[in-house]
Amino acid sequence: MTDRRRVRHPASTGLPHAAQLPHRPTVVVIGGGIAGLSAATALTDRGVAVHLLEREAYLGGRVGGWTETLPDGSEVAMNRGFHAFFRQYYNLRTMLRHVSPDLAMFTGLDDYPLIDGEGRRDTFRGLPRTPPLNAMAFALRSPTFRLRDLVRVDAKAAAPLASVSVPETYWRLDDLDAETFLRDINFPAAAQHLAFEVFSRSFFTRPESLSAAELATMFHIYFLGSSEGLVFDVAAENFDTALWNPLHRHLARHGAQIRTGVSARSVVPEEDGKFAVTDDSDATTRCDGVVLATEVPALQRIVSESAGLGDPEWRGSVGGLGTAAPFLVRRLWLDRPVHAHRPAFLGTGGLPPLDNISVLERYERDAQAWARRRRGSVVELHAYSISEDTPAVRSALDARLHELYPETATARTVHEITLCRNDCPRLAPGDFARRPGVRTPQEGLVLAGDGIRIDLPVALMERAATTGLAAANALLERFGLRGNDMYTVPVRGRSSLLRHLADRAEGRVWT
Image (cartoon, rainbow, N blue to C red; front, side):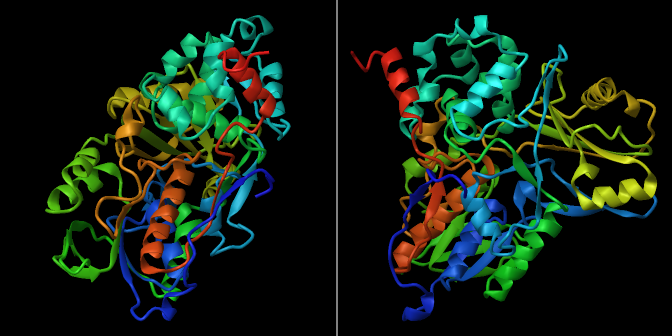
């Protein structure tokens, strides 16, 4: 939290701990991803009795980790792919400080270069941290930006990028897709591939399917709204070892009951204001509050099976949620190393189906140990927003790897694992207004997750953590307990000069 202009969102007041209440409340948290763990951590901090149910055998959700066994009998770490822990993820980092106050589980990456189909390369290394100097420096040194292109940008149409305000930006731009927005402002096509599609692909979505409001908000969070910088941290070990097993132990020490490999079946409100949560083993837990923090398909299934929960309008909004297109993660254990100068993470544009390459031994200890032992490399390829996992897609990914890193063409693949998933939330044009929020019509029932609406400038993992914290705060307020402050980047464009110029471009200021 080095940005002095970060915004504190104060929580409600109340008693500091549930021990001071005549009755200790019990909450069932359904879902052990970032959102559910954020809620569970905030609730246990205030002495609430927490029961957490997680369908998988591990915690962390889409940032979970587990162990795989290779054909030679050796065990290796596996997860669902690369995740960047940006410095402006204030609420996520606050949760993780419960297990490591100095966040020793992270190692910093000072760059993540981007390359396009023409061989042009952009980099974030060495940029100034202060907006808007960071964006200006990036544009001036980028091979995909040219002065003649920039002067053609329609200043009036592009004004919302400089004057982001949440949630107002959603009312202005959410009905428009990101591709159309960039075309309307006459943004250089080559720069679009490398400067903006990286945000779109972070949502596992192509620009034509992504809300322009989400794109503008992302630009604010990472470029113009924060001075935390564009570099980020990565977990130095697999996610289970680095993050979630320690947090599991912390929660257990504070009385939380955590059950993995268990799915919730239904949540039924009772006449006394309590809830009956039934899981797939037919066990029922009665509680004072429920946090539904699952991915979209599971949320829809639980609500469908829970008669009397919420009202018809709310149930309709849950039913109207969608998922993004499938994404594919392909991890290869190679019998020879990639060249030492290869970056830990390389983003791509205009090189379908490849979206990025990770060289895991550059930062992850398990991969480092395997690479040293076998004198090889552990490489991961991502393809976002695909139709389906096919042999052709896998072959095309491998071909792109060989094209960009030619030394891998002669390497033998000792083992490979390919995952294809379709459980990321859809953030399409027009979704924002219909998306359910953290609070629901059912007193004591709250939602959390990166697909749940919250009117703050947060995204991806930080949106999950922030909605989890907001869900916990809503229940703590109901119980008469003190909530937890939340932090974000500024809720509107931080540069008064840029806001003034944007207002003038749109004709809202006259001189």
